[in-house]
Length: 233
Image (cartoon, rainbow, N blue to C red; front, side):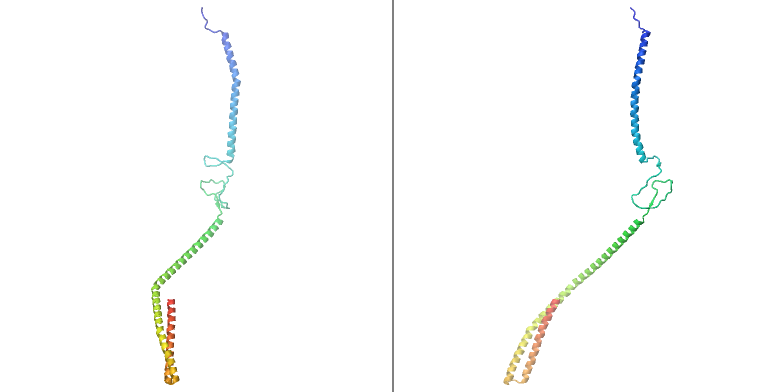
């Protein structure tokens, strides 16, 4: 029994028809997929494009140090009036170039006032330092003079004490002389009444008593003066 290995023309036609039907059925599916992908891509582009456009409207970007803009705001950290603008309209400028000169007259006036106050304070300080140095020098001279005068003061005190001791030593003798003269005067007066001595003896006793009294008074005065000298020394 022999098997026929060749397919019939009818079978081939059927397979071609089925293939065409499969291809036709896949076309709508592909269109849907591509449509969805295109929509997603469009949405993504719109989102990022909108963000880029919004950023570009308020931010200037450049790769060649040039900005395409009608007006560029230039601000200063110091609120001051403009004194001069050393550039011209539409002039090309370089990085670091001076564009605006601010009016600094107020600041210069304040600086001058501060400098004057500083100079005045420095002058006052210098004067005070000089005065204090002069006072210190004067005080040191006074201390040196006082130290040098200590031996002299000690010597003067010792001398005053010696004079006081001598004056005190004179008082007992003067008092004894006065007591003797007073006793002689009293005896002479008694003898004159009885006529035992002459009037001249009474006069002599009176003179001796007066001299002794004066000597005692002088001795006592010398003691007082010597005490004052000790206090002063």
